[in-house]
Amino acid sequence: MTKPQNFQSVRIAATLISIVILVYALWSLQAIIVPLLFAAVLSFLLLPVTNFLEVRLKFPRVLGIIVTILLAGATIGAIIWLMVGQVRTFDEIWPQMIEKGEKWLDIGQSFIAERFSVTENTQLNELRKYLTDLLKNSGSFISGTLSNTTGFLTNLSLIPLYIFLMLLYRDFFQEFLYKAFKKVSNHRIDLILGKIKSVVQSYMSGLVLVILIVGTLNTVALLLLGIPNAVFFGFFAAVLVLVPYIGVAIGSLLPIVMALITKDSAWYAVGVAASFAAIQFLEGNFITPFIVGSKVSINSLAAIVSLLLFGSLWGISGLVLALPLTAIIKVLFDSIDVMKPFGFLLGDATHSEIGKKRKRVKKV
Image (cartoon, rainbow, N blue to C red; front, side):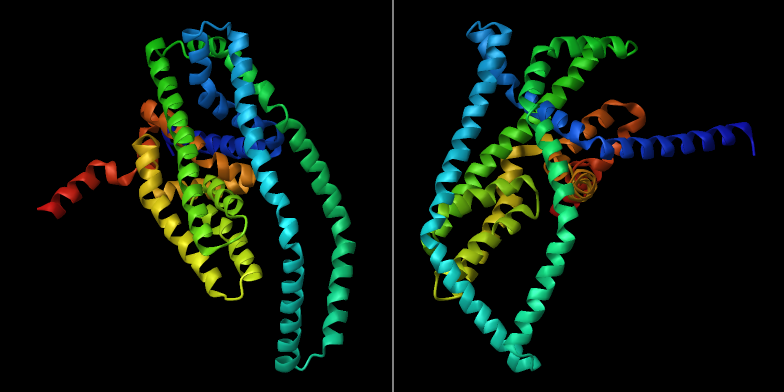
């Protein structure tokens, strides 16, 4: 084996080892890294507001950033307040839920007794046994979950501070990039940063508009079907658009259950499922592509793989961050000559040269 071949093998091995170390570091430090990434994405989203306050209204930088964060917090607080107000109305239908649950339990016990010759007393005894075992084994799980959740929430509470510091030191970070990549011109670095900012802002602002549209459509559909708490269920399912492809499907489960509880006919639940399926079709094929646009041009395969990878790495937080992070990675790959093929692989296949040629052939 020649020296160049040896060098190539060592290089590949070093790259693979580096990737394994990086993935392990991202997983083990997720309680710190995930809030930082959320803060970075939100900083890009809030940057136009901060610039408006500083440039147009002549606010000092610190005051402009504080006002921006307060406005964002007030908006989130208002949304939470509206959601809590909707949840409180569940008290009115709680007796119906208990009554319906008891009815379903009786039907299920009768069905099992008739089909499998298992008496209701035996069923109850087995149920008690499983519940007892579950409670015994859940102690350590609950304590571990609480400790991890407490640590994550503590880091999550630092997001406003992270956003403040990132916006405050944004020129400092830009200067750091100039010094770190001296071989790259400052103009080229500015272009790359501008592309990243454009991608994140177009994705996040477009996503907010998509949530408003999908939430309104969901609410109208639920109101027409007479489902209680239509606003809550409609916008709760819309917020789950943050988890592409499966979010709206998961969000439809609650209104379907509510329809089964509060309505006498199962056709209302079918109507909820059909309306949410139609809205999800519109969202995936027309609303999101039209609003978010081609600036976040990631093909479906790359999007699904990134969702699986980031979801396995960071759970629900990873699912939310998957697409914006993948879009940022694509911008970086497109800006580095060696990585351009991988940027092309992540891109939208319909916008590639081969895709355009096939479209022209079909037209002919």
